[in-house]
Image (cartoon, rainbow, N blue to C red; front, side, top):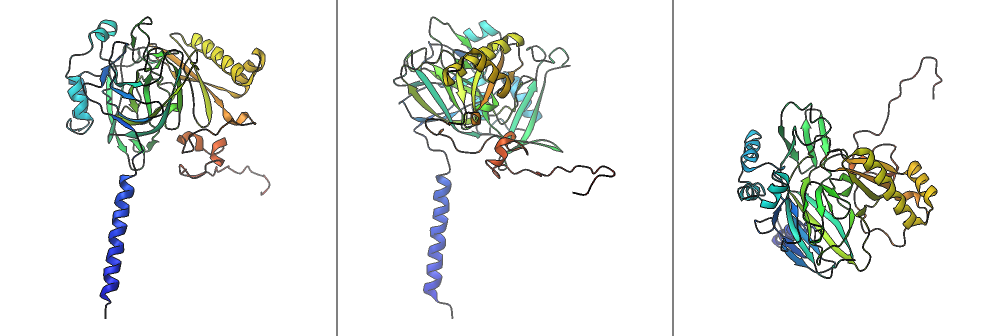
Amino acid sequence: MRNHSDTRWRSALAAVGLLSLAAAAARAETAFDAYLPATPATIVQGIYSSATPPGIRIKDGQTVKIDTLNSTELNKDAYLEVLRSGGISPTTPFIKETVAILGMPPSTELTQRSGRLGRLLTGPVYVEGAEPGDMLEVRVVDLAVQSDFAINRTITNMGHPLATLTPAPTARVYKLDRKNKKVLFGKNIEIPFWPYLGEMGVTPSADMGTYVANRPSKLTGGSLDCPDLGKGASVYFPVHVPGALFLTGGGKATGANGKVNYFGMEVPLTAYLQFIVHKGKAPSVVRAENSTHYMTFGTADVLDVVMRLSAQELVDFLKEKEGLDFFYAYSLGCLAVDFNITRANTTGQLMHTTIPKYIFVRGEPKPYWYKGELAAKYYLPGNYYATQKVGLIPMASTEVSTPRLQGSATP
């Protein structure tokens, strides 16, 4: 005979379990202190200007949830045509907001300066207490892809390596598997997610003028387009105006150094960014780090000049960090530092150096704030980090089959 009290007890436990699961799901979102949605009032079309009013004001140390949109710099009609070609409804979340904003008149100053529609930037974020002479640290706490598709396209007139050989402007839509965090590129090709923001920058002073997005600057950041600045990165900006007036956009589901066809896997992203003011410590240029590497940047319109500037920034950084003289700093750059072509585009070529932290055997005065997963490339068999964080990103196989030579000894 069934014990009804036991049945009621089990039902109560089941109900509690369901409530616990619901509570856990509700807690799944990254914590934040303030929210900046993407609306006509908070989207800036392609410029950094001290005349732009803040989209939000926050306190030093707060984390802001920021929605970003991504039109891949297309106008409304062209964007709608790409959506139609991919079978994407223009009324889905984040897409309908993009369509609405593209229907608004573009910035007069932007069209006068560049003759085209620029990146859609969300902001500016006014950080209380940030003043010229300070350093603003922006921590990339988390990034969430907000679409089930991504757009990658190329064009014929923007100075990417094969611009003159590209037959015609082309845009293609790719399906995303958000649950398993990968791009379904083709029948035999899947690319792991590693989201990052193509655009992160502070506003120049009135004396510096207006800066156009989609161009990097060593003084303000802007179009850094750097895959190493995903989740867990910190970017350090000199502050030029009260509040710093930070803007961001140009989200990617994934991408690689070089940006050779001019665009990544372009998506709308929700970013969770923490803003920390370091009083009186303004760096001379933008720098960055993540849990594995320090980063310096060099930018110009000619690649060999970019290389020279990158080497100079690296030497300056190593002098400051380790007290090395010129030769030792330059030598270390040759022996242990990678020079990565971040952007091979003549609207502002960019290189970033990656300086591995594991070579500094004394470690850091305090642990780095981020301890989470890394990009998939760090877990390839034989990589230094593969043995440090085994299992975070599953590999299909870590065994390499070596053909046995005739006459060789049996192992």
